[in-house]
Length: 192
Length: 196
Image (cartoon, rainbow over all chains, first blue to last red; front, side, top):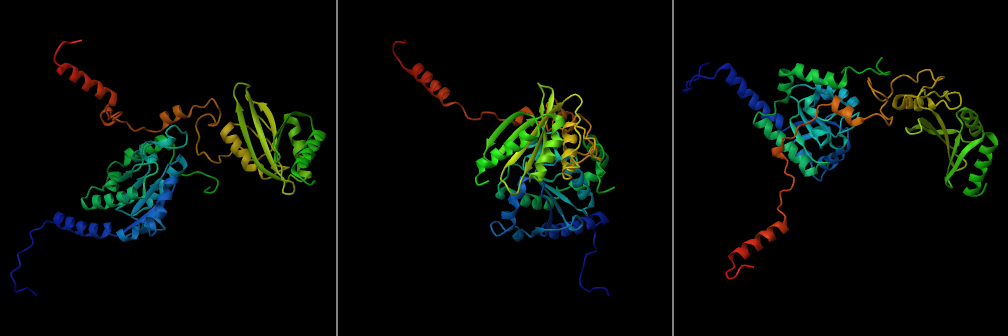
């Protein structure tokens, strides 16, 4: 039934309508972020105060999630050895899109105190795209919370596009992974 | 055995009665260390196991680069008498081979795999000492040898972050002393009269 009221015909194109819907989606997404905590290092000790009543992450609509398929954020807290990086890439590729990566501490930024180790990588963003880095060894809980708020802000401003970068530069990321890891596929006695 | 000193004496007698000890080191009342010959290790471990040291707490290696030797350290623990016994034996570094102690302590399986992975020591008698345990797809000399350079390996293998010079502020604060000297210089220049 046609409305008798005056309604101007929509002049929005398909792309514009899609953009609107994305903005609506982003609004709900950034207010309900589920974290997959990949607690590799000592920065994970900042998460209990962030989650519990001291800083109460849940007031920002954030909570822990058990599986990668249902999580929005991959939280890398601490250093990554070659062995964990393989599993991290597995986990990242299992997550549904849009997916964001938050890295805590100085180790994913430049290696931190493990900069000369034979087993620890130096720069996480060479292997998977990182949206937010929280610097510090280890970062304050305030800094961690601030990092999450920054991520929400980035989602609002549509600059948290790491997952799109992973599609666009897939070959580049894969090449870096191969250069450092040799092979991303896990070969061990429990999987064969 | 009533006190711990007696325990150490008991261990001393036990070990010296079994094999020829090169060097004894009583670390404290609860830890003793014996350096013995490579070929005596199995005999001594068997004796100690029979005497109650039934748990192999650890097996590790030390790289003595100057001596060109690897030193294997077997640490045994007894649940009845509170004494840790370290059994040390030096083996050749160029061709590091040590017979496996699997028949005596089956739990040594993983320690031997670890020692092989990090030092390259071969353990014939252990069916899968060559399997990888911790490192995955390692492509260099074993990493805990002293002649392995982790910095060079890391530089070669992992991309590093560049820090442009503009961003590093080394010493943003001016020196107080320099400021005071500056002030005095200006004060002198403003002062009238005869210049000194």
